[in-house]
Length: 621
Image 1 (cartoon, rainbow, N blue to C red):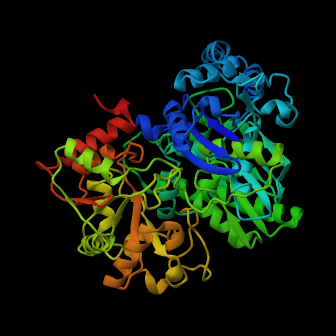
Image 2 (cartoon, rainbow, N blue to C red):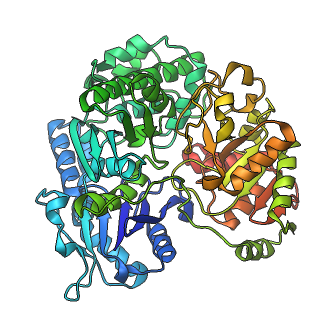
Image 3 (cartoon, helix red, strand yellow):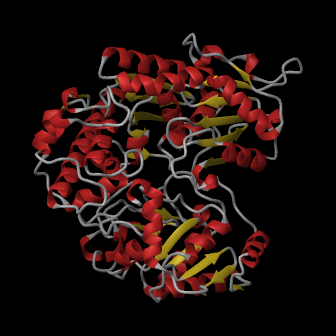
C-alpha cells in the first residue's frame, strides 16, 4: 500500500511516501525550487517521492493532507467576526483566498497531482462535515477495479504532529506533547501513544499559543517570523533574565504548564501581519528593532527572558504530562519541538527517562505523520518503522556528480578509495580549512546532519566568526553545532554514556574541562547542540569524524548547514558547487570528488548583499 502524505499552503511545504509501513522518501519543496520556506503545493517534492518509490499517481492508494481545511476556515471566520471591525483588513485578505482556493482544496490537490504525473486524479474525500479521519476511512481508502483513484483524506493538524513523532519513535508507549503556532483551533496538545493508538487528552486553543508567543518575540527583535526563531534561541545566551517579570504580565503560566496570553498586548487575533501592538512596546519600553539594526543588551535580554518563559511553560507541561500519563518516555512534536534548549530541560527536569523528537518536527514533518497515522492508527497496521536517521531526500551517483562538475567547468579531482578521500578531508579540516560536505541522500528537516553540511575544526576559536562572516554571511552571534562520535559524547558533554542525540535537537552542557578544546562549538552559555554519530546510521560521515579524531585526538567536528543566509540547504550537485564558488568555503568534497580551485576571487561583499536580498528583499534598493 502506497500512502502519500502532504503538508502545504501554510508553512514549509513537503511530501512523504510511505509503503507498507516503511518510509521511502520525504523532502521539503524549498530544496528543489530554492525558495526558502515555500508553502504552496510541493510539486517537485511529490515528483521526487514518486520517482524514489518507482511509482506514479496511479499506484498511490491514498493521499493524506496534514490538517483539516474546513475546520481551519471555521476558526479564521469566527476569529474575524469576534474581533470585528479590527479584522477588516484580515477579512479582505482571507476571504478571496479561502473562497477562491482553500475551500476547494481537495479539487485543487487532485488537479495538481493529476498534472504532475498524468496518473488518475485522486478522489477528494470531503471532510466538510467535520467527520474524523477514522470515519472517513475504511475499505474505500484502497484502490479497487471500480474506483482506481486514490482518496484524498484529511487528518487533524496536531494528530499529524503527534503521529510524526510517536509512530516513528522507538517507543512502544510514550507521552506526547505537540506545540506550535496554531493548527485548526489547537495550538498545544498532550496525550499518550500506545502501540498504534494515539489519544490527545488536553489542548490549548487559539489565540493562546506558545508558538505565537515566540513568534511575537522574534518579530519584536526585528527577525522574520516562521524563519528566524533560531536567531532568538542563538541570541538568548548572550542576555540576562532582566525582563522575565514583564513577560509574566503578558503570559500567565500555571503549574501544570497551561497558559493564557493577555491578548491586549498581541495582534495575531486580528492581524495577518502584526504579532504585537503598541501596548507591548510600551510595556518593554522600546519600539520594535528595525531589521539589520544594531543588537543591544536590551535585545539580548528580550531574547533571553522570552526564551526562559517558553522553557518554563514546556518544563511545567512536561512534568504535568509525566504525572498524568505515568509514562517515562516522551515524544515532542510541532514547531516548538525544534527549541533544543527547552527539549533538554524537559528531559532533565520533567521526570522522563527518554525523549524522541524527529528531525522535521515542524509543519513539514506533518506529511510523515499524516501518512503513518493512516497506515498505523486508522488501518491498524502494526508499527514496523523507526526513524533512526533523516536521510530521506535525493542522492546522486558519482556519475551524476562528475557530469555536473564537467558541465560547470570545475577543476576537480576524483579520489578512488574512500579511505584516501576521508584522510584527505580530515587533514583539510585539521589544517583549518572550511569544507563543503555533500554525500548520499539529503536530510529531511531544517538540520544538516552530515549529508549537506559545512564542516570545520572545533578547536579553532576563530572558526565561528570566519564561517558566519565569509561563508554563511549572517550575524556573528549565530552558533554552530558539534557532531561527535557517540562513544565519546559523554566525555565531552554532560550527558549519559551511550545516549543517542542523532538529530541535533538537544543542548547539554559542554563539560568544563572540554570547553577550551572545542571552543568553536561551545555556545556563550557553555552548551552545545549535539549530534551523536554511529557508523551503522551515519556511515561515511562517522568514518570522516573518526579519521579527524585519529589525527587530532578530538572526536568532534563543527557541523552547520550547507547554505548561505536566505537560501535553503543545498540539494543538488549544482547547488553545492555554486555555493562553494560564491562563499569562503575552501574545499568541496562531493561524492568521490574534491574541488579546491575557484576561478577568480570570491567577492564576499557581493555574497553578503545577495544573502540579505534573499532573506529581506525590502532592504535592497
